[in-house]
Image (tube, rainbow, N blue to C red; front, side):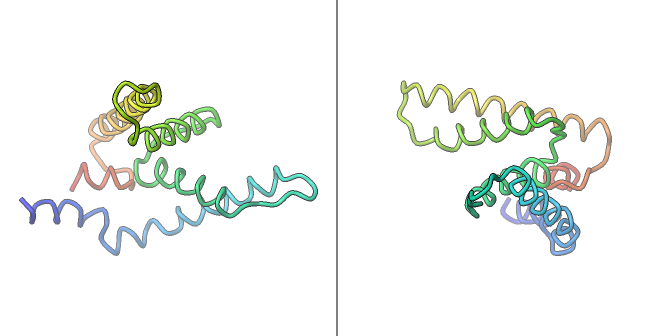
Amino acid sequence: EHKALRQLLGVPLAPAAVEKSIPRLEAIGRARIQERIDHIGENQVIKAADIAEAMALDVIWQQILGLDLKTPLEIATFHKNTHIWLRGMYHKEGSPQLDACLQAKEYLRDAIDDKINTLLEAGESDGSTVGGFVFA
């Protein structure tokens, strides 16, 4: 079982696959930095942590999951649900935050399920990490 899992992970995370993703990752970073520059007011500071966080979420939906989010609202919804899910994992049963976490988890699970179904219908990988796993 361990060997099978290593082989499954090895395909989309092999050096050649990672190397092919570098231009996409660089484009994500450049887009996030430019977005911050375009929306900064006079005498405002751009925080590297804000860019890094937004970029990490963009890498997740674009490169790892390969989601087809087109509008700023779709992207913001993904970012929001990911934040809620990650923060909510530490809340106790019955807390309102846990309920929100479970709803966010359902949103993310549905998005990933839809992506896998789209990949299976297409019959080939789209270059995302999930696409690599599906067709490993």
